[in-house]
Length: 448
Image (cartoon, rainbow, N blue to C red; front, side):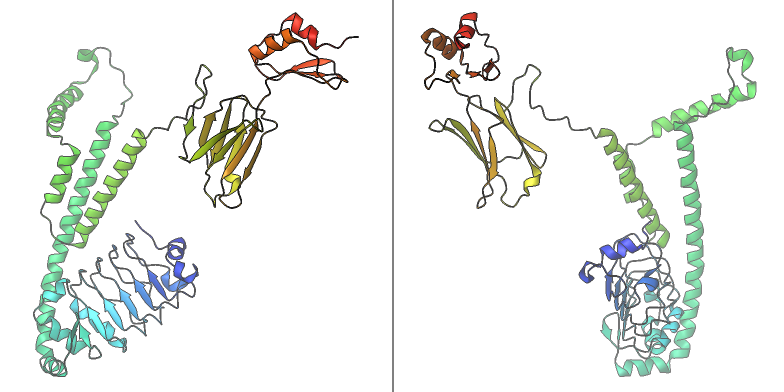
């Protein structure tokens, strides 16, 4: 059931900066609203109110809207015109395709002296003999009825025959009210039967334990209970046989002939609501959590991934001994949504939670890498210095120590050894699998 809440009105008042107290026009159509409430408290300056295609059964709680000029209540469940005397500025009323059968209830609109146009087509009262003449004679301030202009001669003729027409209208109203009372009783009976069927279905799906345990069927179970169970078994089997698929039940519901009444509209609404809930439950059961994206396999192999589907270019700058990645990040994207992670053998960029990962052609220095965005294109530029491939010894001498054998060994393995005089240690910056020989270590040590 849809209700008129403050949040609903604010969401439909965007044209007024979501201010509801100064609102002059409000549209609440197709919201499954069943009761009019709160509008006259929060929106007293309303001039136009759209409430068509809902399930409203009664006109109420709008009598304080003194400035209201146009009220649209088409396609609802209204059976009587009432509670509109307070709408002093009302000029147009639309009640198309409702269930107004008490045509004499339009007499209350005599107080709405500014009312110029009314729509009642599609209501049961529109089929009454003398319908138009009765409305034209009752509401003398009207200028148009059901979109057709009222001529002066038509009104004079209707006023002359008004007593006879009024009598006919009352007789037809009485017959219609009897018919509606029977329809209401029938609808109530069907609703009770449906509720009982639902309860029985729930009981079958959730059997209740009677608290007794029976070990010997012949001796322990009472004869009356045993006979009752025997009688229930054929009925259960019949129900299993007569069970239909959801598609068959749906087809049967829509093809079943039924009267067009407020109760049938509510029944259709309940059926659609039940279908929607069943689909939600089914989708929740089938819904599976998406597995996380595999970035590195179990055996340690790094994968190339481009989830955000961005254009990129990877340049090996041999002159500056570095690798440059140009990633075409969206120009107006906030930099806070980008996370860069540079590793010795690969680079990973998270763009709005989506991973871009690329294996590098050579080993780089993560600590010396630099990431920045272009101010013109917005591209992300990542500069990653490559790890050197020669041994560099930091000594007091201006030239490095020459050791052809050691250099050959380290070049073959791709290791860069750096000597630190202060710490008297050798740092291995590349090839973690390389194990230096004792001769290589000896060549790196200073001569004491």
